[in-house]
Length: 597
Image 1 (cartoon, one colour):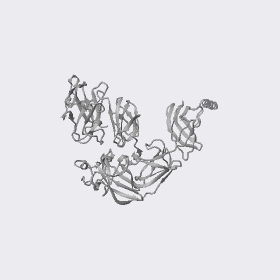
Image 2: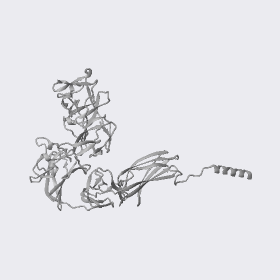
Image 3: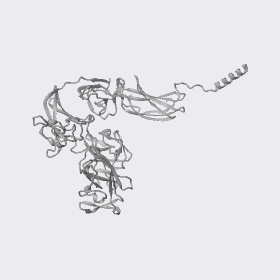
Image 4: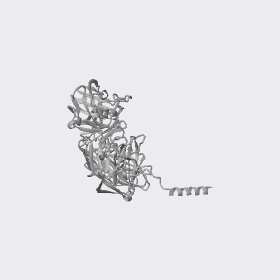
């Protein structure tokens, strides 16, 4: 038995001596899992600027996570951690250098730490020299319902005094389009790039002052001001009534003082404002009701009982004679409320808001969701100029490539109507081009977000549809029989003779016609693909054909089949039009099929 026990103990010793040493639960690895760590740029940047951090991670035991921290002479002020899988990873990450409270210029150190599957750590560092503290000419209070207020500078403090909705939350931004530096909540503290919203609004809508210091991050919410009702009404004139009877003949609008367009006035010291909400009393009466909404149109104001009219003559708030040509404009209908502001007897602002969009006319310019409407904008790098006679409609030509990323400056694409036949990415700040490569006419209404896109190539690449009783987007009305807003139908393949697009059809029994050339070419009105060349349709008028009649506005896929194609004879006219010669004498067809986006 003693011999057997000695043999067993000896065997256990052998096995124990062969076992590898236990790996440590944490701590530095024997060799670094990080190589080629670099930051670009590595000098002469500001807090808030974006830098690109690159490196290679590799560990045979497997990668678990990596951590990035940023520190200055006062210590670390930013950390982030992200998970990893696999044994190798190429880091290529953009980070905005956070702005610490009471920041001072100097050098920054970026530390990158990688943890492997055995919890071993590798850390490398890289420096950015000469980091400066940014300065701001203005800040922007952006609420989560898309309302944006400009905060004016007074020393280190930025302030805005305005009506703030009940319970409003949001952040403060360095740019009106909510890019770049921002301030939000992290726990109970306001920090740069904080991910949570700040609470600004109280229990009810109120007019008060909000001040913020971007150095100390101190936020001050002032007391609500008291306003006293005054008997000095303003009346709204124009074509924006939500009741159809007001805008029909013979009046074609409201041009007299009406109780339902009366604005109630209020006063606080040397300041006054007038407020109005489109009435909805449930009667349907043209005398008292607007069903709680306005429509797109023109408007101006009349001081009650006086021959004084408030217009936007020469892009200034002007009190004087009646001048319909100097009307204000709104290009989107809906439940828009309206306010007019005055200080020391001078009108300073006309503002419309539906809770998600704001349009403000001032003597400094027109503001859309807090951003000043510029003289020109760009779309995919191509300039779009302000359309003559318009306040915020822009137009130009752009060369677009299938598959490219679509961006814009001067308009927020996330709030714009994304043409479903041309782009994908609706609701995002950038889109992707899915239509064929080519030259496109682009027209953008920066307030409504309506974007008109027309391929400029004409047949055989595309054809066009005109008419009435249809819209490009649900609820966005287009003018009837308007060559400048025709629908583009795209060829389904390079060799096919079928063309398709999606549009809405209204339940009023309209008609349409098809065309072979864009309105941007000479004699475009002669290239009509008349209904007489189609079979299985109900002709309407000289060249048109009837649309189907849905029970309510409905999206339809429209497919035109030109069979073997056609020839356009521009020498021998068919009446007032070019002669269309169907190849092999085959009749064309068109189908309208209900669909959804």
